[in-house]
Length: 90
Length: 90
Picture 1 (tube, rainbow over the protein chains, first blue to last red):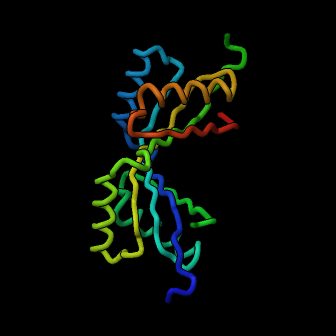
Picture 2: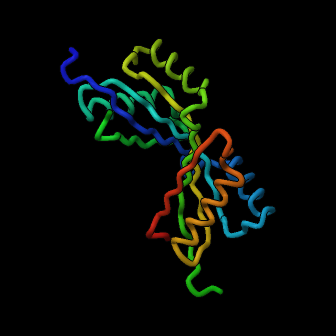
Picture 3: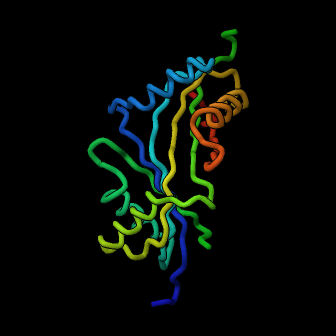
């Protein structure tokens, strides 16, 4: 059981689907405009999670992180997610 | 002025500094444990922003995004940030 188990760091990025209106992003664009950053045309805000999990392999870590994103971290109706695994672990 | 100006996509990742307690992350770990994901040892929650901005170069885009992160998107007292620029633009 303990054989290959190790800590693996994974990152999950959750963002609103392109068709979903992002009022927080609009507010940021307007705030930036008033601060003189008119060059910023659009902002979309998302969430970012760093997960440290025990797994026997990188593939297992990726599978677990994807399940967790799908079941808890993202709302699949309006959000999409993307998982990255730190191959080196720790 | 219009010479090389183009839309450049940048990403800003904001996360709590390691020394700062993350109660949202702890709540997620506990929720996951109750769902059977005991392999997840730790979760840190951060923010993720996609910025579309007009810039003459990748360097200019990086500088603007870093300023925006420093002045509006992150709280430098408790958060750190990281900027990535999509070199291809659009």
